[in-house]
Image (cartoon, rainbow, N blue to C red):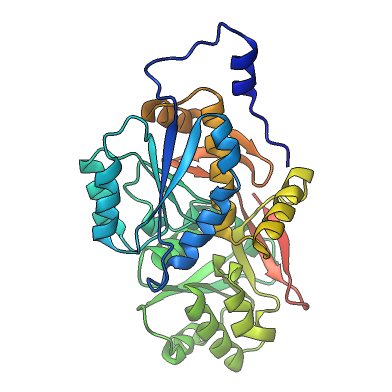
Amino acid sequence: MKRMALFLVVCLLFPGCKKDNAHPDTLYLVADLTISAGSGFEYYGNEVKNGLDLWKDSLKMVGAEILYEDNQGTLPQTVSVFNKYAGRTDVPLILTNNSPLGAAVRNFAEKKQVNLLALVAGDLDFCDGYSWVFRDAIMQDQEGEVLADAIKSNPSIKRIAMCGVNDAYGLDGMEELRKRLEGSDVRVLQTISYDKGSYDFKFILNNLLSTSPDAIYFAGREQYIISFVNQLRERNGSIPVYTCDAFESPTVLQGLGKNAEGIVFASYWNHFDSADAEAFLSLYRQTYGKDPGIYAIDAYVCGQYLYHIISEGHRTASEIAEALASLSFNSSVKGTLVTRDHSVISHVGAFTIDENGQKVLLKNE
């Protein structure tokens, strides 16, 4: 893939491009990732590392290097990493993958004045409090938009029932969809929540189906979707189902089998129809022997984004933050990226699963 280093070339060709002594010769972008086995979160960390690694050479050309640290999925190790780099002017940014560390890490980062960029694929519950979040979407918000459009475009749906996990992911998902259906011909019959760890949906299905809905919306993680949909299909084999983004996981398709056919879901919409995107996919497959997951794609585009910012001459924490706040950037992989609520976001689309088990785009933003 072609990688331009325009800023470096200009400085070499024009003597007037002088070094600013306030800017360190080399910037270090610390990637604090869960990459050790045994934590349960190493998949995410290794996906992020794979995506970022493809930008290591290009970043070096503009005077930036990636330093990897393993947070091992623990708070003490993350605190140790932050202590190691906090206050260093040559470290404008610490990147972290989606981890279970939550508010404790973010509070510590704030006290240490660490500029923290989270690499998170859509999860609102992990995002609050970071300096910046690089993610595919503000998922519940954008999911509500595309699913509402898909539901309203189906003339046979006039009544819908909802079920979601009893946390921000499910409750916010149901509320966002409900708001976007207001004023339409589609009436929300009821919303029911369930607790994490609950996989028996018999009682909930009794309640949902007793209202005779034309469709059901469900919000939950992988194993919940598998349990809910399979139990639903035993009771009703044809009612339309609308759900969230977990279909990016092959586990869901494997767990549902033919029950996945026809389900409509919101998910990340990557732009893989350009020559540059095809080159990225080819490079990733050649390097790692597999297709990139959503975290690898996020990390790759984040590396692309940071390369763009640094090559434009933004080299301090404040300059990078200012660039993040104002930059609208066209990624060859994700299309136009914009800043919203301290998040760098792209598109969400409505998809379905066809008779061959393939993901098919129905409608995008």
